[in-house]
Image (tube, rainbow, N blue to C red; front, side, top):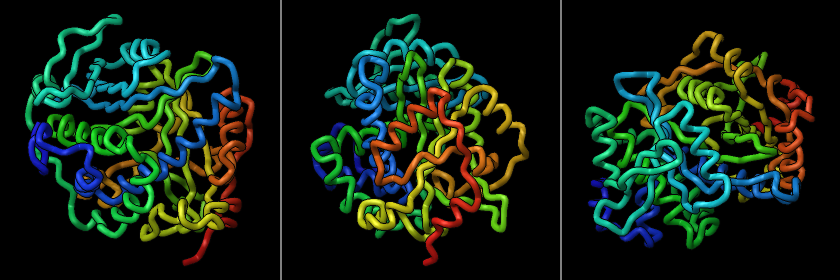
Length: 360
């Protein structure tokens, strides 16, 4: 597999600098999003402790989803289980109800990533990932490239050296470098778009896809709303058909502007106490209602490459449930469990978010 840094077999993936160089090819919001995801991980890791027993299970998997370039309804899910444990078979079988599932593994071979198609609980021969995606994708698309105006080096450096480097430590290769290599140069060039499932949780025998974003609402003077990218919305619809429900979580930025990144979440504990986490369950009925709404368009800087203007669906903030402030990890974990179990019926308000807004 070829990357802008050279062939994947020639990269020193245990090098911290290499991990940064890989991440630096993405827009700065990818690195900042990883900071938020890491903080969210620290919250959901409490869920098994809160629930107790065997009723909660966090999956250690990376999942990337794409569509056939010539058939919108033909879906592929590339699943890389970093560790193979309890619940993996259930997750793969559920995905198989609506997706062509391909397992991925990291190999010491020159190919780097290898893949095998998963059918009826079994896998076939393992082949270089590039051989599989070339067959599935039908064509080699544009080289993955991000415009310079959405790649702020200061914000990349802040996210990586200010947090990710220490947070992931010896797991930097598996948590940062390899996932970005896999999606950007292993899968993306062969398809039009790729989406990922942030985290997977099994709670009380229900499989959940957990997605967390870091953003502020729009729509002043009101009503306030958040946007859900159309691609992500259709992914949630496809997951719901497979029996996998979604938890759409948002860390609400107290700074309602695009110039403030996520570094305040780890450097300013006072402000962190004003970063409210919201949650919304998205199953079949919820996603049907969302998709019925007219499209809106967001600026180019919100797209993966910084080149296109993605379409999205509006969601009123009143559709979300306030969970707690980001600093209160255990309380959030408890309230997430209540929400997923249908025992939390509270709604966020516009005024609640306006009261937390910090002028800067």
